[in-house]
Length: 223
Image (cartoon, rainbow, N blue to C red; front, side, top):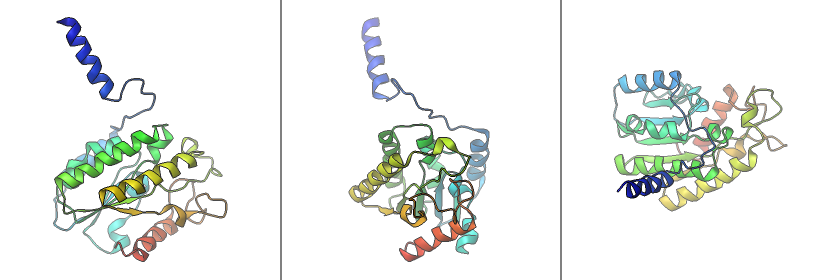
């Protein structure tokens, strides 16, 4: 009996994908908890348009950028795909009209395998499909970085991974019938890195970067 239980446990453990895991999937920082508790305390409104992601989303003043109070910010600095998965119930509680998703660069910085990041993305999108099927899902490509800056070294030198993930996200959207938004090429300089016009640290966007992001969405008639 004990042997059967041990075999059953090993099967479940292997199926969980944690066997031999060498990357950091933790997400519950104090800041994460502060933001999530605030999000849960705020009232839901019909017709919300959600910008969902990490610090690159978090730093955007989205309602002001769009001059629309229904455009809400659900970015959390430092977040990863695991953290987004853990808070999708709050994101979907208002049954939003649109969700713009941009997540993954922090996973990449932790050397999370590309296939795990894409798997988590599929799970995020599945949650929307099941719990809020009328919501338009817009998956935005991970942005380029620029290693000329001294900060955020763990995020640099990962261009091949970013491009591979972006290609898989595009394929995922095509298969699932969602919108893929290729932001990546719009932020490149001549050296194929994040243009210094749009960043002051090689990872995050400055004011010009957010206005560029807005213009890309306008040009694509997505907002």
